[in-house]
Image (cartoon, rainbow, N blue to C red; front, side, top):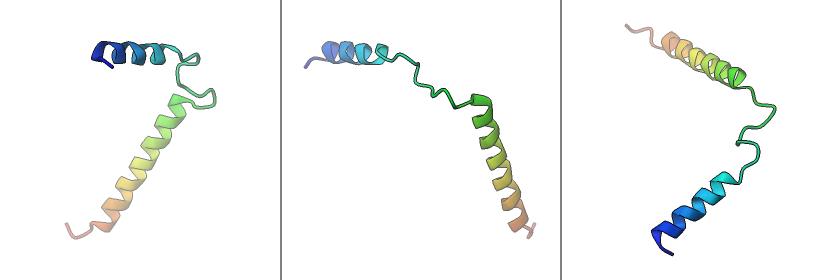
Length: 53
């Protein structure tokens, strides 16, 4: 297979999606808010254990 035919096959495969890759039940705001909350919780835990400063 040449590079051009491989690229053409990948483009065809990528265009074949009907739903855009997102699941209907996933909200980007809820996912981002949950990730932010988890990171803030980890930051708070880290600062509680680092009391030597």
